[in-house]
Image 1 (tube, helix red, strand yellow):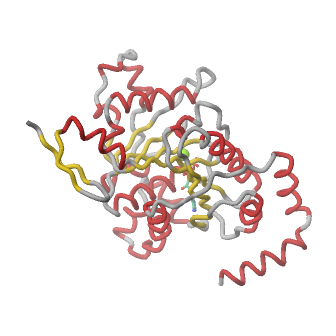
Image 2 (spheres, helix red, strand yellow; image 1 turned 45 degrees about the vertical axis):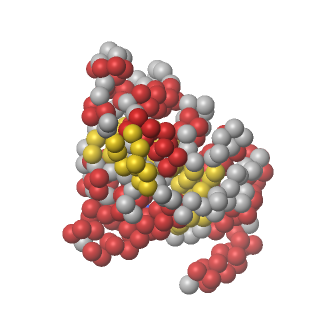
Image 3 (cartoon, helix red, strand yellow; image 1 turned 90 degrees about the horizontal axis):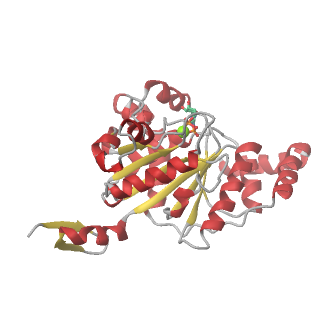
Length: 314
Ligand code: ADP
Ligand code: MG
């Protein structure tokens, strides 16, 4: 009989292979990283994936943005998307093998790109659904310790919200500006909705490309949720995209970049500690609009808070 060893957090089992999937399902953590387009989701996702792999986890990153460049810094090229592959195989799912769609990236992170529908036609959300369906059929869902979905969050329609159906945690990437926080609030609403039927929690916000966090703080006061990390604008992160490398790979030849990796390792460690997170209660649109606008319109009132906070951060 074919036996395999299943590693668990609380015990190790030796079970016949046919039972492995059932057991492993208990140990697979699924993360959904959301945020406004261009905010740094993919950059952050790739580096968190490696950070998790550095902590000994077997990680799969699934790009669910029609931009299909989620895993670019992990693999160094734009890998064929699920949609490309489905089209090439005339939509015969049974003819697709895991190696057709799953590519090995830097640091042993496995990579998948869902892709997008033809421009101006079809539905991006449908593509996400098909990707999850195909990966389940390929049993790829049951091979990993952690699966990270990198998802566009400008519009969290039913399709783009699909990864939340599978996720244990949502992580929102935002900067310290109006638009990204507005998108964050819509994502929070989607998490609240999905959490009604599914054990989903919002792990928290990651501030990106900002040294200021005053507006983020203002938002979190209105819609309480953890702030996992705040990354400043770092030129080397921008360059990493151009080079097609993650910060961890760049740090191999330039150890002075280790401090950037530490931001991502910190996020990974928080996730691995299975934080309680929150089920958020989003701020009504008009209220949020005036809350964020007021911040810009009454800078004097807010400057003292910012100054006090800067002082505390020092
Ligand atoms: P998204 O996936 O949200 O569309 P990307 O991850 O592709 O966004 O990031 C958009 C651009 O911003 C990329 O060129 C990336 O290198 C850059 N970037 C992301 N985070 C930072 C940062 N903290 N500092 C500097 N540039 C960043
Ligand atoms: Mg992206």
